[in-house]
Image (cartoon, rainbow, N blue to C red):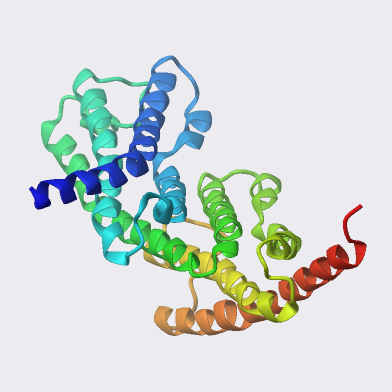
Length: 292
């Protein structure tokens, strides 16, 4: 009976945590398929890419996990893997439908898949193999958000910054005009986070610069960590062309280690100190103004 009660309690926590995001992924794939069938150009439907959306969902799940009773890293492993598999399962479903029915307007199946079970099988196998790298990235994003809960004031800004990096990454992969993709820059939003940190910090007892220092530096490192993850994806999948990663002349791993030291540790620290100064000024301004 104790085991059953514990399992029921676990289901109660996980079900509301996962139901909405999983339904969103399924709906996204279905809507994209229907829009393509009704003749909407692929240039527009590609914006509904489940490949990019799954990473936004991962950030969201990591951000709200403790609110659903999920506080330990091992608790996100199975949901993260299932999320990656769930996303690919819906893509595979419509790949099979498009291939068997020879739906020319759908991007899910290639022309070589139509009536060619062997080619269709290899296409499906490729999606199955994609589960592993997608799951790894999903787990990294979820775990990073879970770590931020040690400093709750950083969770919201960290999630927004991560979302912006994901959106910009995929907007560049989709070859959007630079003026459009650059509009999703996380740099300006990161600076705005300084005002958020000071304003919210003053409301939750972080009313001195000393108390704001660590969260500000953590936020700086979080921002650059998201950028570094985008660099890793560019290195792992060279066909994803973005400004985040340019293949170096020398060894890739040497380049990435140097980028981590410079882009994450150093730039993140400097950025965190800048945000700390802005947050400290905000706290000071709120304290000197006082209630009206």
